[in-house]
Amino acid sequence: AQRVTQPEKLLSVFKGAPVELKCNYSYSGSPELFWYVQYSRQRLQLLLRHISRESIKGFTADLNKGETSFHLKKPFAQEEDSAMYYCALSRQGAQKLVFGQGTRLTINP
Amino acid sequence: GAGVSQSPSNKVTEKGKDVELRCDPISGHTALYWYRQSLGQGLEFLIYFQGNSAPDKSGLPSDRFSAERTGGSVSTLTIQRTQQEDSAVYLCASSPSGGSTDTQYFGPGTRLTVL
Image (cartoon, rainbow over all chains, first blue to last red; front, side, top):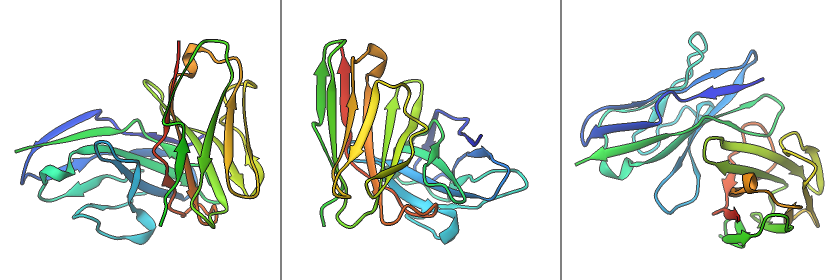
């Protein structure tokens, strides 16, 4: 079975500092990996996905198959980055997303 | 354009009653998903529809839970004989085709409280 682990429930950093939200997964095949974000009083929305190899709002994530990780990084955190972040996985040919428990990121001024 | 909508936004019910939760996906999206977000369990998949068919019902926790989709559009999640452990936020999502790389677009959720 697939599993996604986000080891930090809470993460607090100061504005301007680098931020890294950890995500590890277990899946024997080639996964599709995503980061979803939920800002206060907003709905869950896609932040980025590994297949696109994109940078959204300054965030990047690299799939490391050797370490089975998909950590989310941003070099300089901004206050508007405060939100709940979920790492998610879908396996090839499947449709459902398997989510991690989420990390609540707080950016302090 | 309009996003995914869900109704009601909040539902309070008594243990043992039946409830129906509704989801209106984005127009043209063939794939529709239900998830549940509860304390301690995180976000859990419940069921996936492709058109009006449900090829993956593996996340439904018991036979008290059922869902249908009609006209390839609106979906209803029904919970019979509700229990306190059913209290959660029920999220609906839709995607263009149901591919594993599809972006899923989420609704605002229905918060269900079972007293």
